[in-house]
Length: 210
Image (cartoon, rainbow, N blue to C red; front, side, top):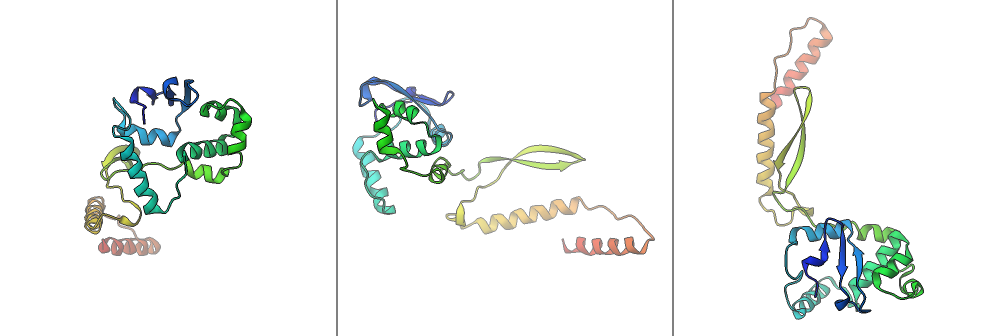
């Protein structure tokens, strides 16, 4: 709650906790995971990371817990980080330093086997969804070589929720593909071999479908 963006280093991927806000009154550095960095990046700037009061955060968390039927756990975010970090890395001494514990035995007592490696893998893979219209890379083969070009493609969430016009977009995309295919058609060579004639006629019929 009291951190500002000056404590976040997204180049070196760590958070600097000043002694003034830590429980032990000792400053420390905590690494930023890949998915945490992905959540930070769109919002990085200046000033406080959370520019609202503690009551606003508490009310918002209460709404989410009620909506998703999640029990209240005191210091739940800290415990989740510690449990999943240890399950993935297995370094009790490093986790002890991250949490500011005086004794690794304290860390081991609370977090050993609190989460499985499989659960940790899922936790550290939680990434923000791509927004609609976000640029992606598209590869195409033209003139015998591979070219890379950027194309704006609407990212579709699971179940196409919130996209009632997706069917129109799909039909429009298919129409564009048909037009491109028609421009690339080439006249088939004249052949006398019966087998090749059969293949040529089949290809002609296939072109007529498009």
